Length: 467
Ligand code: ASP
Ligand code: MG
Image (tube, rainbow, N blue to C red; front, side):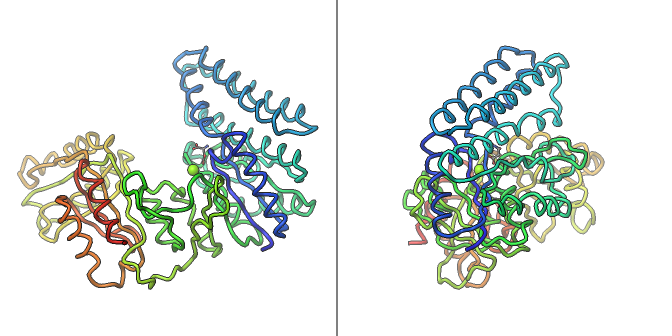
């Protein structure tokens, strides 16, 4: 292997012991002959939340919170650098502390204004990554691994949807190919900030919470060559179920892009859902590995996994705290446009729809949304269909919550007969009632809703089928 992009998440860079593992992992890759290594880092775990608390505190006028956050950050990073840093730590510390000073000053002005806009949040919330990249580069150098920090604000060009910005791939590709190869040529490891980007005008943005995986995928896809993308996290790869619910859950060896997309979308918190799309075109395989157990092979994610493994399915996940909204009425039969108006109205509330189902009787449409959005959606639809409700064309707009969405994922579901029967028989045997069913978003999964209390029983019953 010649070129490798490795991403280390918040817990992987979250303590001195974890960072020691990171250093070992990077050294090992060099020893194994990988010539070009780009490392993408998250903020130390908890830091992004702290930064956000500081800004929101500032908005509410809590100036002592700002000072506290500043102080905590200074101490946290100083401890790491004094323990693991080398000759240049004073320089690194000075730079980091001045960035924290800037944050504190910025928060002070937010407290004067009394308003933290999404743009202000993005200016500040990426600070954890910007510090982390400098810190990791410094400790790598101290361990005799030449390394250079790179601020992705100069490299990942995005639109201006603050808090959830999308990369402009052409510009980003150009910049990645300008900035990273010279670092490789100098024999250095490039240590890049996850999560952050900037608009063409240079205004800081973030790609959404947990999006450092996405950054790593963007970098891997934009490099002229990249053999693999390794996501280092705190578990042994992607699991067949949440081990807290199904204790016999195990690591999945191989998954396809489609399978993992389905999993990421439906609640397995291993990869950010947007991670797949940039590497999809480039055909780069992903490996999910455990920083705290590097010997474990982890999960390999490949462009086209072999569906014919004989397994019924690969994994079962649960999305909790969702509600089912139903638009129901005898007058809907054969009337075009009800679905369009329903989802148009839901979209205007900015709500994410997780599952949709309509039986062919056309007398009701139901769909699932996060719990927090249920009431807004019901109110908005009641207003939208005001006239239809008066005319009794629509009888009711109702909500059922809290529910859990269970998703069973595996490409085998596409072609093997009888899987659905087995799944629903197992669920029935466990005494669980199925409320709504839909095929998963990428055709390699089946999703259905059950009551919140029965969610765990459903996961266990289905997972038991893998034995
Ligand atoms: N630090 C950011 C967050 O917590 C990004 C990441 O860790 O992926 O959302
Ligand atoms: Mg993460």
